[in-house]
Image (tube, rainbow, N blue to C red; front, side, top):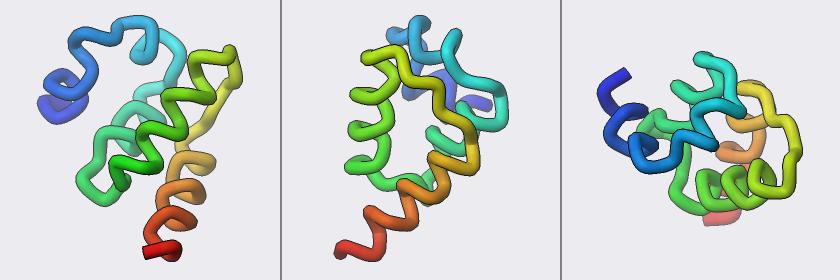
Length: 65
């Protein structure tokens, strides 16, 4: 929870759009910065994103490197 609070304390709009599980997944150290950026861009457009989608996107970004 502290990691999520530290990462997103200035982006309340993002916290309000995600479930707790999705927020924890997004802020997890295993989620790459590239995946976080891509997810944040999608959230800004109004897309709804769930925790399993975040995990899949993070895994896809990790596989690229």
